[in-house]
Length: 597
Image (cartoon, rainbow, N blue to C red; front, side, top):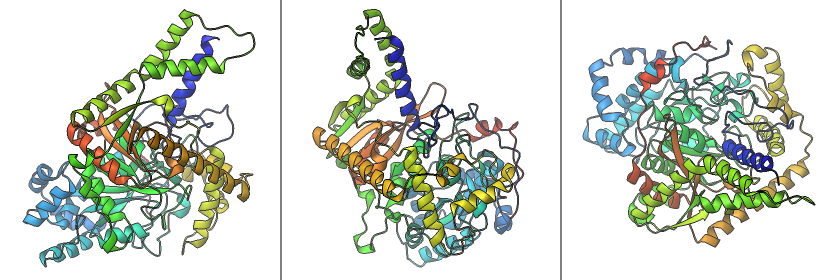
């Protein structure tokens, strides 16, 4: 066996882990073999230097503050400073306490966030796509309800940003960031938005995203859309990741209380990890997918993003589309007592893992007449693997120690025993599903200006410099897919069944209700529809936010919320970003000139 074989396998493992299959979460090293195009040799042309400048193009949407001009003019520096002390990093329950005591109103909370968006986001972080012109009026109505003694629940008067693929039947647009949908105002709210309004949430606006849920072109940076511009990481020169980039960045930067993102495979947990917030990829079907622009309809889910597990649980409770008398309250699982009722499996990447990887490499090279590797070759191979996985293993050993200190039962699971890396949504699945599911959505959506993917491609080609400055190879590949409906259905059934069985077997074999793995680990929870929760775990030596991912059984949100809360409270790893310092690095970046449509 040759050492280069081990090195090749090592690079393959790194590539797979980095991708988290890139539907919504590309690494800058991603290649199209893992990221939706058929040409294996082609390498994704991805920016390696962050923050990313915007191209010279003209489709970026202007953010309209005109409905709030007078109110913002009356927002004094003194009041801003006082509210900073009360509201920066405040939880949703804390905001409720302030409103209950009369020290804060929902109206003033909206003004506070509008002021921060104006200061830190416009042509800077670019996390907010559009503001709701009725936000103040909604907040005032909710304040009147509170004064009259009516409080709808934990989200009463709390501002929420929605990813711009979630339809709202109001004065805002729903576009997925795409030029072809720039004029569409949906005829009604998505069901999850209806639920939020009933719960008393203030829909503050729409969050920017990676266009078409990061499925436009392999060279497009995460966080870019034609209408929204380039979203940037509030912690510095790091990828914001996608596609729920704006949803995660806005929460991290304290531009909103909470937000809603969506995920097919990585799009909530990955941007949450890199922007140091908590993000929940919900079990498929727990939150309604009604009137959300799809990527892969049978895998897409909406999920809450917050600065704490408490806020995520509070928002999730409001989002769940079940009858009021049967609606679950996920906040009741926010306790150490609840966490101690769960047995947790934690993936480990230590000596046993390295030896298993080397064994696999040797077995894969059993060609006739091949020689066994020498001791020197094995030693070098171990060094390669140890260097790659050392920091990861230390992170997870620390997590094990944290949980055990809290008297939570933990079992270590060697990472090679996890489900295979190929249990993910592959390029053919994405190509077929995007065309099929998007066309179905466009055909049914009322008042939408285009009715097919083919028409969208045609519109983009009419002015590619300004409408698709990075190209549109992914959606063109989708339009030209040769996969039949029969083949698509068969692939879906096989992948979903295999992934579900693999995860169920892992949970049952180890008698666990929660599994902890790296947030960027390629994993089976996307096609299986199982839930996943990202929790901040600290920072790398260069200041990049780190996280761990908790995976639960299907509809096991209560399990991962309980354990996630216990871990969060023990570590308190999240830190607020220094926005002034980060934004100071944006001065020499090109900014596209916004356009009013």
